[in-house]
Image 1 (cartoon, one colour):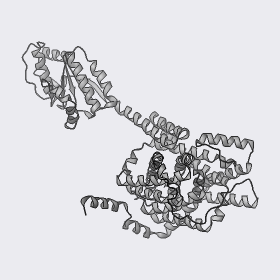
Image 2 (cartoon, rainbow, N blue to C red):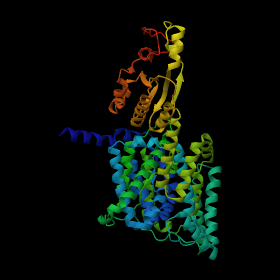
Image 3 (cartoon, rainbow, N blue to C red):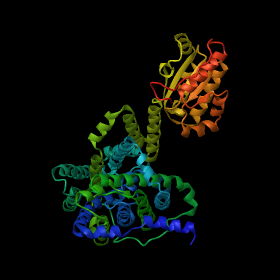
Image 4 (tube, helix red, strand yellow):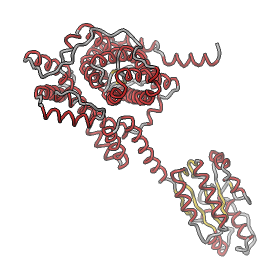
Length: 576
């Protein structure tokens, strides 16, 4: 076997389930089975609701929860993660359904799954941790708003208006409701949402979502509430796997939406896994393996008519709080939902759409953590700007653009803050002038030599300010740049430094540099800065050496009348 094949197989083995997973599942199976049952009860109305909201129907949500939930539980990188359809993914899927239809969504899910597997092999999981917290909080707030607005048509009991912009659809739904009010639907949605929100405060351990949905369904049947539209017929079981939805001719146009879905699946899944780690002691997920598991889940789910899936923060949190300790809990959750699909489809089909709308409205409200948002907004002005901008962009545009805008703005503000750390300070020469100088010579040196210490990063965001400050130097014969405290320098910084040195040379001012660090020499040398500084020997290891050269230069120019003397390196500061 070739070396490449050995490496590839070794990489595959790191992404596959191991003995530790089986050992953990055997540790306390009763507790895991109970946790899985509890999560399934919570997940059922959410799976149905998100399936309906996506535009592919409740059966698509159930298929996703069963197929993706099982595969992600086995192959994912977290022992506690629960996967399935989520509100964030629904937000992205709605415009895809509107433009490409159900077949386009299934194709996008399949392509996104392949992308996630590729990201896992490329070890991209670790990079997701670089997404700033204000961006995460901002798009979570925006998602909550979009999920709530998406439920308005079903909560008002009107047919969903045309359009893929949630604000437009919501406004049109309100207009339809005003023309023909359906107070039955409003009452059911409001009652379900109220039971969930108030019940969660009263008894957090009780799954009030399923209690409220059952109550609404019984009320609709007993009271013969014809205005309460039910989900409709559901197939008794999962469809046979098929690739009939795949249209090779449309693959090119679906690549961009697939990238968006893959990015969201990766981000939300890894965020959810991190939340699970933080809620426990001794648990740590493998980000690359989590991407691999989510990739397999998203490859398989479309084959059974399911929508793209991600790790679900709410269901994962329930899983952890109910005592789950291994993957057996998430696998049990998928198995229970499968049993419901096969055995209780006729009953599930009678659930009113307004009741599911109430579930998702309550879910959206619970997604908003006011305390966390308030703390983030008060931390710094930059964080507040990024958070608000990301949330507004999620509502007005879509989630992918919102995240990109948030990342760009956060990056720009971070660069601005780092650039402010770069300083060019004039420093006195007393510490570097030895006692061998006479008072007259000391005065002449101080009059004709100016020393600057460059602190911090000299890169593109700070370089031009550096050039402006250095170019304003006047009435001196020698400028000494102390470079030992430069933390980093990029090509822009090196070019600006070269330009500043050249401008000072043209004005008859000699520039000397001291203390250039070894790691900065490559960029300075490749762009010709060192060559320029070495001209006439103007690059030195220490500041006293640079002063000695400056003194010799002034003597040669006739500014100093006394002969050059050798300076020592004794000083109050380090030589560099």
